Image (cartoon, rainbow, N blue to C red; front, top):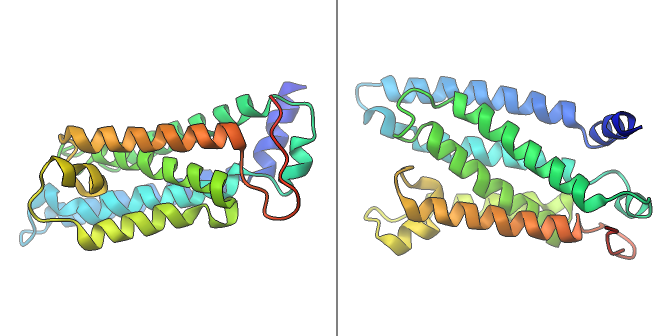
Length: 210
């Protein structure tokens, strides 16, 4: 019975399309990162900043539609422990995303490589999860997309502790403040999603059952 429910859950949320999309993004990120790092007129592995910023954002945007089924209110009316299902869904998706993206940056992982990709994946997933709880899955992409684009456009050249915290998507993975911010965002976004679920796009909002 549990296996059947799991299969229906994954099918209803388009898990196969999500995995396929992550695979494509990982391959493109690896190819782009390798090309940028090998150009003599760039700064070696440090030239991979666009990849580190964009690849985790794209994978998090793919995750958004999987955070709710076709009829969120109907699902909430079923006697299932939805908070546990949401927790499993989000944590497995975050683990799969982090593991896949880390493969794209194994060469010089400390210099805008695997470590920064994992950090940014956590932060972007947290923004998308929080966006789903507040705005619904149709607009869940908006906070992550808006924030990463704004940071990429306005990130300071000289970084202090405060700037490293708010500009975390573009910081080296050795910056502790960037990890603290990304993990905090993931924790808050995940907590909001686990507690409220995705906001229903229409109709009355039902409180999720335990």
